[in-house]
Length: 58
Image (cartoon, rainbow, N blue to C red; front, side, top):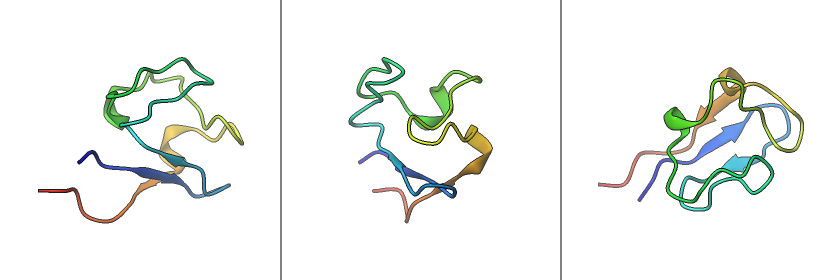
């Protein structure tokens, strides 16, 4: 359903369907909707260090 993103540093996957408990991001929040200062909850990499995984679901 939602596009998942993977950190190129530690390989953590941000899944919009799950959100981010560390940053208190609610499930259903797309990657583009994350705050500008959001960082990887594992290694603190910035958003520009993430790559889109696969193709978005139709």
